[in-house]
Image 1 (cartoon, rainbow, N blue to C red):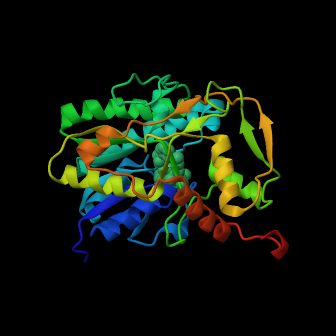
Image 2 (cartoon, rainbow, N blue to C red):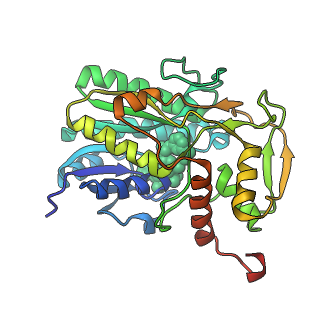
Length: 335
Ligand SMILES: NC(=O)c1ccc[n+]([C@@H]2O[C@H](COP(=O)([O-])OP(=O)(O)OC[C@H]3O[C@@H](n4cnc5c(N)ncnc54)[C@H](O)[C@@H]3O)[C@@H](O)[C@H]2O)c1
């Protein structure tokens, strides 16, 4: 019998969810990983029990919450590839939106009313201003961002009608890896910028594509706000503590307030590794805004959140350490 309070972590076998399981364990909780392993990794589940399940199965959610006497749910399970969401929106609305509705239904049935959502900076769309505030208009420009925005609206109604406490944490670009080197960012196919660039560097993919150099940004390439995954995990634990005190939640940016262009990231990788990433220029992708940088002020004020690991050298160093482990070099000559 576990005397730690249990937290259900949907998507706990994924990149960010696994880091949150570790942070929860270190903070004295019992993270119960609930995952269908569609994109997750069985060997990332190290800090608590595993329940093989789908969020769309409300009855299984209810049974799991009861079995483990769960006090709160952290919800990471989703599909999150922008380009794929443009090509196949139904996949995103069924898994992300309908899946979350089923999860919330299962929670109500079990009497569990504390919830933390992985939301995203993509809810803002083309923000058109330097630093994005939570009060700015949300106008997502791809089905992935829309699916998360719709869930935020649902949660607003569920707070009022059913008494949910619900935080929607709008991550900007999750990056880096745990210092232990045992979990990190790994997808198939990999489309995220930093791991993709590192795979190109190691020859696992032929080259790295820069999608557009004609944006209205200082060097023409898209600018994003990169936040270390360890910082994201810490913010979740802070939000959980507030929920346990009866906080109603709300929507908060998780970013640093500093943006880096694609070219700046590639330069930082070259600096860390001593090698240039092989690159090709491609046209802009549908659904990619020019610039997404968070104003982190509200998370600092309400959650007492400070990004402690999100400087670019730490992000690149931990990502590279993980990456070399996850994608071993094929030949000694290429190291
Ligand atoms: N990676 C980022 O930069 C970023 C930025 C903003 C928001 N997010 C959000 O953070 C969350 C986690 O992202 P990630 O990068 O760790 O992704 P990931 O693909 O590594 O993890 C998602 C996990 O959810 C599981 N899953 C998916 N659908 C499921 C279902 N129906 N039932 C049960 N399990 C299911 C997968 O198996 C996987 O383990 C997602 O909700 C994503 O939208 C990510």
